[in-house]
Length: 165
Image (cartoon, rainbow, N blue to C red; front, side):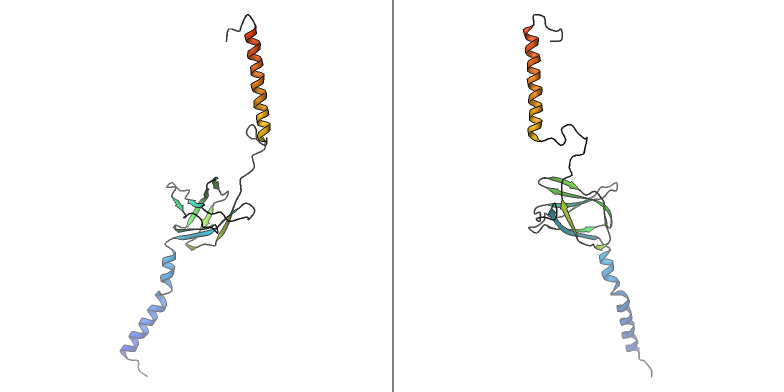
């Protein structure tokens, strides 16, 4: 059986389609990464609306890729980010949260994440006043003020004041 010229053209065209059609979607995926997920309150609580998720490239350019504000369900999406390692920031009206570990993105869609926002407790032995309640701080400040007034009163009652005053 002899194959004619039109049949060869059709066979060649089918072979080209089989080879190049599956490759084309992969070329579009390599154009950038997709990062998506949900932002919730600490402990997996209620979704956080109006929050912006940002990816910061740690390279010398420090490019920043931001999402639109999250919706009522706390859903965010960042598109067109080059594959690589990023620092993750979550910007809220309460402040900015920084993830402790970097985020690794691969080309194309990445697995969705759930971000639970929580503030770290103050460090032990850190800044003065760490771990004290508000009223305890006011009592300390009040004691210092009263002590300073007693010292000033004692100095002004003496006939001879210190040369420093």
